[in-house]
Length: 213
Length: 213
Image (cartoon, rainbow over all chains, first blue to last red; front, side, top):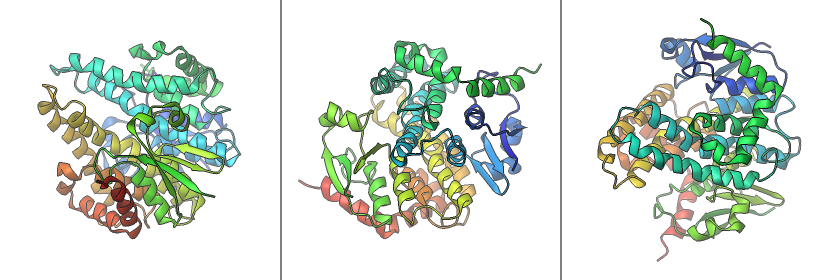
């Protein structure tokens, strides 16, 4: 059954891999599942045809046969559940890997997006310069806790899982901030994620679209 | 096997049910699973014994036999997967319900927490009065989209699911802001969630702890 995902016609990051379709591409590459991509313009994202697929007017979406999904975490989980390679067989280890998926999007990503939003949406506001260090400290608090938990391990809980895929993807947003480099084990963790052949293929695929002239 | 969760010894909301243990209690009540509660002080939450359970030093956690989990969404998912009543049998409907779980915590909750954090953590900052309407508008944008998708339905996708449990729990945080009342179908949706006997039992259980003198 053909899998079709949606991605930005032109990503705001210009191809740095931060758009969320990269997370879904990575998951599909990890499990060796081919997929097709339908590109969506910012205008089309807010039109009825796309809103029927994604009520919040974002990308990515996932379609396969009768099933249509939105929300990156849910799509990655669906892929991980349907194919081997992203979730452990053991029930307890599986539950823990899913815990890291939720921790990535609900505990670690919010302060990171808070910082990104201040830079992006409130760039011209008079308070932003004074707020940025406060927001950076909120990110540091989470990174410090995550760094302590990871310690010297390669991945968050045993073998690489969908939990790592989501966490590495969330942490990648910090690259330009320099914050990641304050925690060498997290910087190495992210580099290990990026070095995976499946990530490399996912990254290259989104770059090919976003580097068209 | 005994299930033990953790909750605040004294919730910052004084028993309004906004602490995240309420979400887990609600899920356990929906599936008719008894549970024990271990109360944790703010001090103990940051100490090694609790950090071993929850790397980010928060509540709730979930312990049952050999399994220890943190992160509310993951705990609710685990309960939903292990018992009937919170996720549909049909595979596609199940994937869609899980989508709403992720949408609740990753798409709808972040702007709501942005507003809550401004009120709480940046209350005394000179910029907060001017920022609050901007943050409220970000919440409104999401509520508008969610309201459109829900339309006249009782729940987000067919029967009540863990997706609704998470979404109602997230929206409940808006009660004091008045924003929910701008979207009558969402206000009714939340009221339907609160009216469920399982929610009532969960709410009463946390209130009993937080109203001790």
